[in-house]
Image (tube, rainbow, N blue to C red; front, side):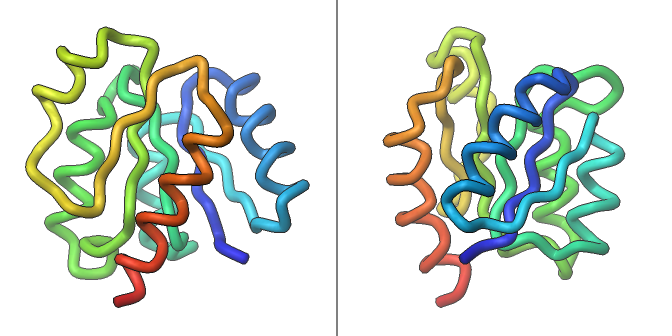
Length: 124
């Protein structure tokens, strides 16, 4: 299965997602904020990142911009998640075939459907 990096400043969200993904056979790495996510993305080289939009210090949009500018992480798929208004959040997203948006609270069926879309694209 895939190695997934989960990034959220809410440790309960990281834990809930981790438990769910571990039960499905994925390897999971957690990060508490944007800088932590960027470190893990470079060192752990996840297959996919599930990233919260609104975080202190560096928000999810800026994390994506930094990921795309780095040769090591430029092709890492990202699922950006937020409880914010979807229209507002998606307007801020850059045009990027490896990035999707998912509203909180998360629908795990939708999450796994996005995995199916993004993981083959990253490998191809």
